[in-house]
Image (cartoon, rainbow, N blue to C red; front, side):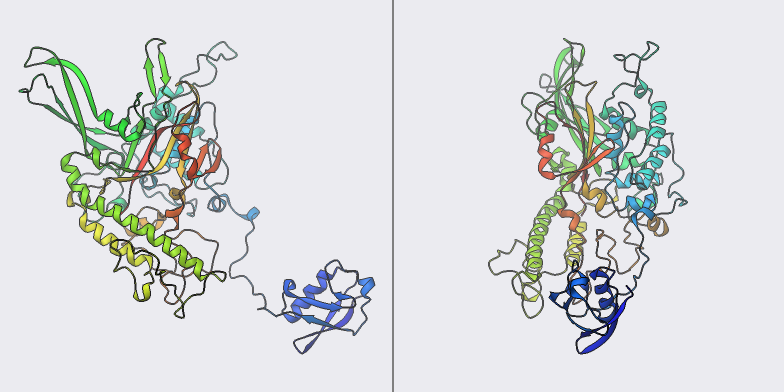
Length: 595
């Protein structure tokens, strides 16, 4: 049947619309929308028998040419063409898809979970990727590296592997990196003697220790230099190029050896650089800190030069330099002489998500750290209180929330107890200032408290306060078998990138830069949001559409089980304490808190 012309009456105006009874009512409603501007979901078309529905039968309605139908509904703004062309998922490149999804995993190539967990845990060090020259995910494939002159054999394959991980939405095959790793460290090419191949020789590759792989990878990239873009103004380089691992991941330890049996014998003092601190686990160890303190004090026997015989010596160790990244090794494997093999210590040992390492420091270093450390702890409490207030304010500003004042801003409830030291942090009326104002004020205060020696030391911790960002776990009962996994905090991937200090290179590295960051409308530290119309949080008279510090509230983690990546809620972190054959924390990576 040919279409007929009917009249549509809406808001006092009449429109002629074509009606094809061979097509469903939804098509007719779309034509009415084009004529009147009333969205289909808000439209009511009055026909014989009531309201036109999507499943109505035209044969029962029997419309006639020239018939007038009443339309009820409020017209909205007519649709506009999108400002940017619509790109469908199937048309996106892999590097574009990678930015929309969670980080990807690594394929297990046969007992390679120890290497996969190491690579994923080291992704929690964004400065390392800057030093390696890993281009940002949104850079073109032809982008040049910011640090092409990499020393050693392993850094370049590691950089290429991290580049691949950031530019795809599928699990990555790490065969290239694995082959080079085995060439540089032949121990990882050992064959499994318990399994025989078709020719009667060793079959697949043997399982390896993830902590040993972690240490060997860091040793293999020790020649990678700290790029200039990571060196803050005023830092001292002494005329020599700094090595990244040495500056950002290695501390310094002072060991003092003395004997109570020979009080007149002067103590022997030695200094050494360390890449990790150990947590000894015995039958009395319940907490990571107590295990670390136990490892810093030990008793040994040696010949005394003054007594002329063997005597007991006490060795006390203290840290004289704390790096930006602190590696903690939970000593879960010990050699058992009776069975002539390494056995796993399954005792449950609790580890903190934030760690105060000031107690591990020497008296001289502790004196330098304490002013900024203590003030930062107070400021973090104040920030937490402000977040609570802002959340209540956000609820009050929603249509279903309580009414707001005539000034358009919600004041703090009179029942709220002011937090200590924040009496001057509110504007008139009790409303909070913009968070950026507080952060700038706090940063200025904290920087004034940082000791000049620490400020000039590239890659050192200026507060001694750390937050946990990555964990390598071991699952199983035996040291030479089982399964390794990595856990990395989500904010590592979705929080702000590291601060860089020079112009063009900083722009190419996809990171914030206080010296030359562009002053656009977008906040360089803000998290990605689905709201494409978001403006700046500093626009006066406007409510911010995104929170630049929202990542601080995201305490969940990513679980990397080879090629399988999933979200791991913070409430389950305590299940990694140990106490059985399930996953137990083995290597912990802590990052020094920013000012």
